[in-house]
Image: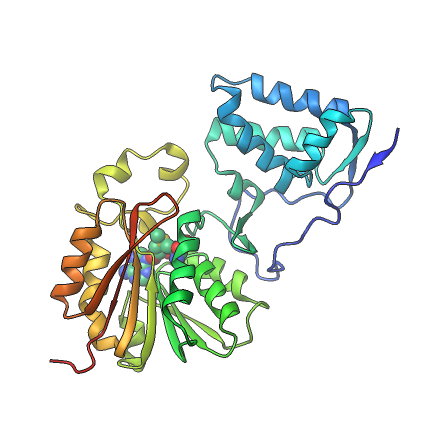
Length: 328
Ligand SMILES: C[S@@+](CC[C@H](N)C(=O)[O-])C[C@H]1O[C@@H](n2cnc3c(N)ncnc32)[C@H](O)[C@@H]1O
């Protein structure tokens, strides 16, 4: 029996966990490798997919994600095993450990990202925990838009509601000569963001600030060339009907945008013209059906050059606007 070397050594999170974010659910991987016959792994996978009331085809992407991120065997390696089941693989965790994680995910609705304590996002592997929103795929586009709409790196930029620090980290890495200010109200989220920023951006390049929206930025009033935000924008009634995995395991502060979902966007729009340099850019993510309402809020706040942008599904998910050249 030959030994198929899987993704070892497993690619470590970009952020070493010197400052561990609070995440009681995360189960650290054992340091030793677990050899298992390919045939055995494939049979185990079939059992996990069959043993639940949901359709295997629905469960399969999540189980393969767990095998990849938690077990260290990629989807491609898994496919090869179907052709060569006589080969053995080395897993980062034993099948018993992986089964326990899978069981908790299915029965306690705990996101796999929380159970593993990490989340791939853009070219990063971020640390995540219940204190901060798991960064979503659509927010990767927010970073792309910021880069595309800022032909030269802004000298000073800010992110409002940084959560895990994903967006701030991506911008700081794209613009190593720039300086960023990352605002966050939740101390639990700030702990996660500190972990993710630590060691991966130059010391002092991104400053984490505690407080609500514009308030911690008052010392830099009128100096910000770019402000990005993915604020809480889900209307409360919609939040209340979200699937339990999100509603019970992700922070309500990160999701609930009040009755119409626009409470945070209203506050952010109101301060933007004064906080930005003349001509400075505000870039927002919002709910799938808020494009017109956000446009009206930005216009009412005196911003100009209003524009809207689609997400990867073609939905108008982002708004951009600039501070006028002269404040009226
Ligand atoms: C939708 S999450 C976005 C997190 C992260 N930027 C991302 O895109 O994954 C919104 C973030 O705003 C933070 N937040 C909520 N209210 C806030 C406030 N008044 N001031 C600052 N941050 C706030 C939440 O704690 C949460 O981290």
